Image 1: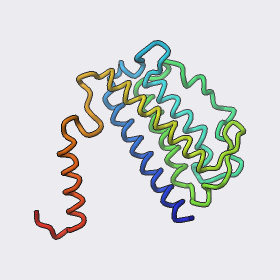
Image 2 (image 1 turned 45 degrees about the horizontal axis):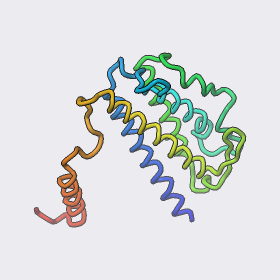
Image 3 (image 1 turned 60 degrees about the vertical axis):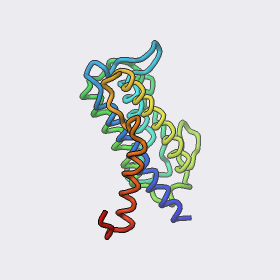
Image 4 (image 1 turned 30 degrees about the vertical axis):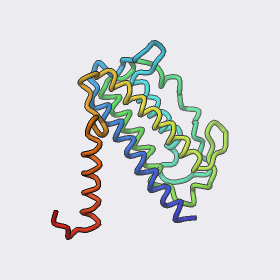
Length: 192
């Protein structure tokens, strides 16, 4: 069981680093005036999503940066969740810092969790969860919001958008490149 838990923690750390990197690359394409733009009335801007993600990361994981604590509450009374959805409060530089700080908290907590922690209990809004369940809940939550960010930025950038994945029409070339790299790893003496 420990080997599976170690594999899970390693995988979730890697996957969430990829999700963060995806968000980093999308946010890097925003102009200063784009952070607070939204696509439809009642929608969220990139700024609001950044504020909310950071607030959630601090609330859920801030107390676990040094490792598991049995008394951790993932929704502290000090959190003002509604303020995270207020528009126009922060500059682009402040939002970038907010983004970086939130991810540092989440990644720091993940780094300190052990395989044994995954079956331990923590609470969110007074509701008990295993640490594993809380991580899975946040993986879905954070990924969803990062993909919202990607959609917002892609829509705002229009034809100036720089793709974050395999460009259209280049799937075959990409696959061939990946396969060639894997073959070189498998046979380092291959002189192709």
